[in-house]
Image 1: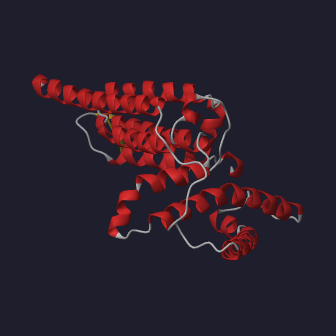
Image 2: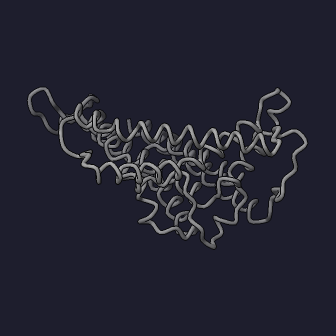
Image 3: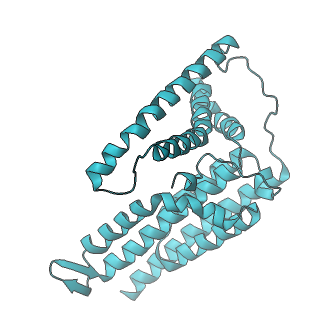
Length: 275
């Protein structure tokens, strides 16, 4: 499961999505996430599916590689579906067994929540897989630039995000190495009940935390040795500039968002007219 986590990893490819400005991809991801909560009914999710499918195809990232990140949230997905399936009341009871029952509204909500969660992971994965951590940091710092007037430490926030994204694949690789070493020494991480599995994780977590603190200390010493002093007066090796394709991408994503609102409004309108 450690290898299935794709957050923070970059997939190099020559695609239009890779060449877009990181600010465009950050804004597009936020708009897509908001649109998933705006979506109402099958038509809204159909529009979101077509938009996400087109973006994934244009990114040239293998779909199988992108869906690897979904394996890490299988338990969360199952819990979400089960809770919505059995705990939401509706007008019609579709299935009953003792105190458990599935209603029409519960089934609809469970399906839509599962689709929403899957699309959230896929949409975020498109951004991280097609954008390097440095580009994401520069894009976030540029977008939050106006907050500097309110004395918000924008550069420090962007730097922390960059370091966190860089440490994710490093720590995952370190976890895999420690786990293999402990298994070679006779550790068992698979069998036993929940308490036994939690105890078996101790030989894994202790060296992992020690390694993480050691890496953080080395990074801090390296930054001090290079006289790092924050974002004041610092220049960019590759300053961000909007290109024609970036403006076209903005137009497409805002058109998609307006379409989602129109679909939601029309669905609500016809529902009221039907009643």
